[in-house]
Length: 551
Image 1 (cartoon, rainbow, N blue to C red):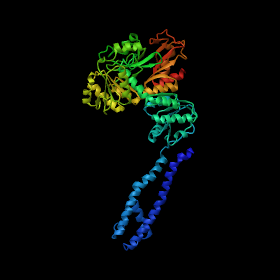
Image 2 (spheres, rainbow, N blue to C red):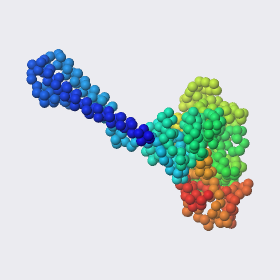
Image 3 (cartoon, rainbow, N blue to C red):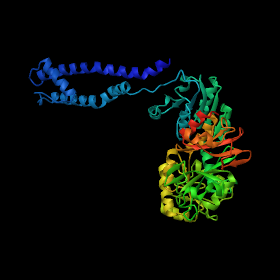
């Protein structure tokens, strides 16, 4: 049945081509007889069948004429004109409709319409997109097989060109019925909410008992998704909005502004170094950040470029963003004393963009008692200034220069980047916090001047990868990932004796022991079996560590 469904379009196009091939000789022969008759009766000249056949072929193929180039009788002239238009119609309309599709089907890789067998342990993902982009990369690096279901042929072909296994089809044409759930370990539903519900119900009705994770756009759809059969439901846009709001207001989150917690103890945060800071211009070794504040510098953003695995000779650049790891209290102390620019505590928070993410940011800030001002292109309830955030007149009307911070929550990364450039030029002292769609654009938006940038791909990718792979980690980008691991294979040994950096490319940045986060791992330090080990390195390096020290 599946093979028949797959071959039906191919057979139909070939049938049309065969009909065209059969019709063309008949048309030429009929035209030749009609021309031979017209020349004899109307023009008074005799033409053989071969001569008439030559004329008909030249006319219908639009390649020109031989000795017959003018006619006197009006009917003959009209007949020739008709043949000319039929020839043009054949060349420019019939051939593209019949011949080109067959050639495309012959030479272009065909997208599968189903997957009657899947590899054991496969993660099935319904529709790709920015929300699962980081997850796809993480699963592939971990060696987990993935199968994508796409309803768009263009997107399916793009994913196929990236080397991913894809099935193309819609729910209406029964694509789920053509995919085997035997061997699937988990299903991730990433389509529109109504389609996600249909996918979940179909999977459960087919007998699938594995884990189903759903990404939804509306929070009130979480409960219906759970009733449909999902094991966990996430709202990544709202989580992203909450992270951006927390970065802006310390009233919203009594923990640490914009920090990401890893495990129960370690916190990873980004701190912009003000040009007047005592750290600006110092080498990392001279600054002795660890001894002075109890945090570890694991990276530095400079003009959008990430310096990962910093050395003691790395210069702390004025205006750069340091990525630091440590306990919550130590990072708070470091940020307040050595780092970021002083905020205008009396100012308003300006939110540019009032979509899903912007709504969540505004809601959380107002619930925390903060004053907000919303800029959006479209007038509506909750919008204070109607206009484009890239318009200087709009920025003046919104009094952006007096704001505590600007949260750019527009839904286009190019607009976010350009808005950031304009905002930093208009009000250099006002922090810019940016929402990003694609994780690969975080670096560009940092380079444009954003003090903090977070992508929906990072947010949802970390949540889903942690759920599916059992790993707790924070990915800054391909070059920098912080991973929490247990002390398996390390107990009773000293860091210096293990050569972890040399053998895996990872560095041990902290150890969680009891309620403490240990940063200074001196020469006498040895790992305990109950320790939480926090490692920093590239994505590939952390994978290598996990292979060498299985969890």
